[in-house]
Length: 113
Length: 114
Image (cartoon, rainbow over all chains, first blue to last red):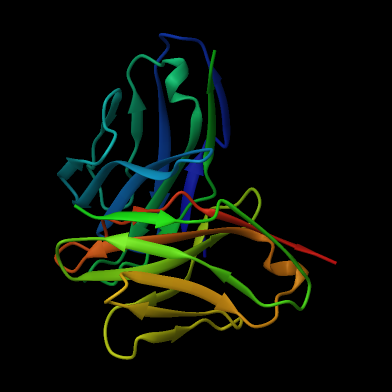
């Protein structure tokens, strides 16, 4: 089973460039989310979606955009990359029903120069 | 809003020693509590969770955590650790009305030495 797949695994950008981090899940999960992980900061929620066509902001949404056109995919867009967005990004999904069990991808390491 | 405090950023222990990783939470509503584990260069995996019922919950690899409502704690324990337990451990909380929105602590890096 593929689970949650993130691409790319590594990316280097220059300040001001834009890019999209891809996330796909094959578990028919309604809930999907994006977190960023920074040293000593734990994981912080960027955006989340409770189903196709529905998205909402998390704790640190500025500089990021999301859409959810299908159940399977939840891309994260960086509109104009900044060095402060250097981080490891994790996509996670959940079946829902308030079980709290998130299934995580392996992460995408982004460096903004 | 919820918050989670993991009191130790790093915990070094010797193999076969007991370990406790501490977690305290803050919330104005009833919560669900979780421990996730992250092995090097991997995503997070659910280790155990408290939703309701018995306040003592166990994982399949020998970890346990106890929900203490009066002390707002959910400490993780293992009586005898292995080298393979070396990882970063994250405590997380969600409110019972929207539990997929987890709030994570900053993590505790457990290093098991031979």
